[in-house]
Structure formats: C-alpha cells, structure tokens
Image (cartoon, rainbow, N blue to C red; front, top):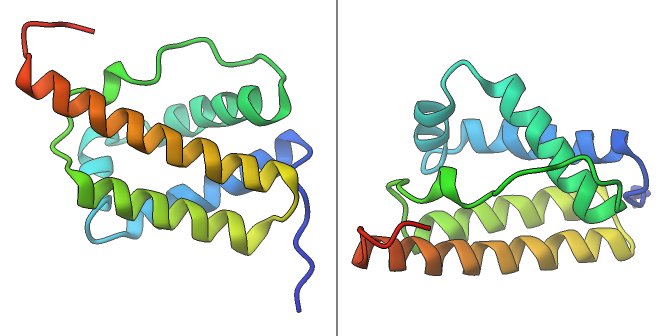
Length: 130
C-alpha cells in the first residue's frame, strides 16, 4: 500500500490543485466547460486556486476574493457538480490522508452544494445580482 501524505504545505496544495485540474481538463463532461471559460489563462486560475486552498486548509491568508461570481453563469447542472466532486474526492484520496484531507473533501462538498443552490437561484432570479 502506498503511503499517502498529509496536506501540510503550499507544495502539497499545489500537488492537489495541479493533479485535480489536469483531471478536470481531460474530463469529457467538465473539460469543455473549464477550457472554454479559462482558455489560455490556466496559470492564473491555478495560482488563484493555490491561494484559495492555502487559505482554507493551511490558514495562511493569501486568497482575497469572492469565489462564486465567476461561476454564476456557467452552463452547469447537478451532474457537473457530482463529477467535479467525484474527481476532487478521488484526487484527495489518492494523494493524501489525515485531517486536512478529510477537511478538503468536506469543504469541497459544501462548496458544491452552495454553488449549485446559488446558480439555481440566480437562474430563477436573473435580476437579483449577487
């Protein structure tokens, strides 16, 4: 059995984020959506995701932003969030163990639920801007 490390450093965050988004880009369902939206700005997106997860998991406050607005008008439904969460969980489970790994999966699940609900609300109330 392969030893899985804990999420303790920024390099661990980068490994998680890079591996996860490589899978996203190659995914049949999610790849086209992400690649169309991000286009050639993957390094910028990845850097933002490093800072986001570094802030959440390591409590090193490097992220300053509002994560939902860029997602508000994406053409996604429950199946996209299920796939996103499945890929995220698989990535965490393959690479990491420990409390921070458990927390990462818990937070990703909560984010998926919240984003899905907010996107649905936004679609039903298009003039009610975040």
